Image (cartoon, rainbow, N blue to C red):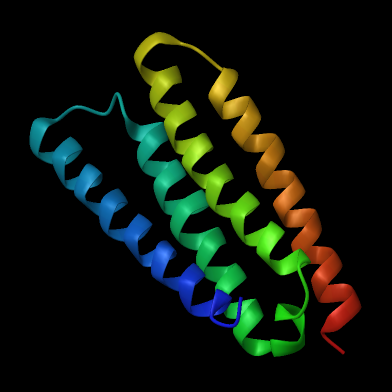
Length: 121
């Protein structure tokens, strides 16, 4: 995945716009029930995904092989899972999606750490 860095930053920017739109709605409607969703979109979606893209850009050797593709998909799926789980929790107090998304996010972070430690030199 030669453009993994660009793809991650692009996805991060999509999360940024979606999170800001939700924030605008919440402010206009004076309704903060979805505050956890807003935070998940901006922190787990925009910040984390974008940082992963920047790390791949700064250390291009990290992009080689199959492991970066696995890390990419786990990170993207986890950000969707955490956001959907936050919405589920805000609307009906379920925790299954956010729990699965959180475990995937931890796995994605561990993989990123492994790639950084073994390939960034």
